[in-house]
Length: 96
Image (cartoon, rainbow, N blue to C red; front, side, top):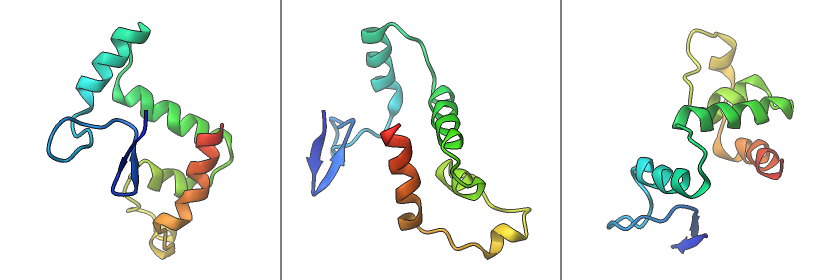
């Protein structure tokens, strides 16, 4: 179910003032109860990045998609990575 919230589609709408889900644990419990498959947030991140890597998405884009810091790498400091640059990799993952 997608909820249109000021022209933004929200996959997991919330019941509070913000109209989007802030705390994922409640939604996860409902999904686990309905499908019978136990998982945690790191399982979702692991699955996401495994699919992304299988699509040959560049390593720096993978780090940004996981919101990992790009410190301790001199080369990464020269790369300007904006949201628009990440749209195509995310779409590839979505399409998979």
